[in-house]
Amino acid sequence: MTQGVRIDQELNLKGEVCPYTFVKSKLALEEMDSGQVLRVIVDHLPAVQNVPRSLGNEGHQVLEVAQINESDWSITVKKA
Image (cartoon, rainbow, N blue to C red):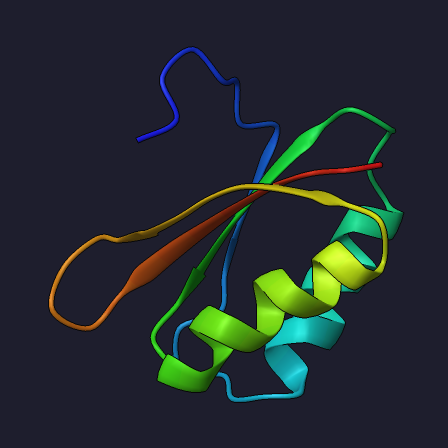
């Protein structure tokens, strides 16, 4: 877990598949201020790799990718 990091917004994308997981994450980040932290919850396995890679390519800092339970993953990203 990302201890000591304040999550400014959480986005639950369970049930969504790529590329929507990335697109919705990107749109959420666009509404946030620089330095704010977004946690994205996904259950689509390809999104666990694609979302952090794509957001990293956009210049954002991926703080953590962690499995929450058998089906869900948390992706924590700091806006550039």
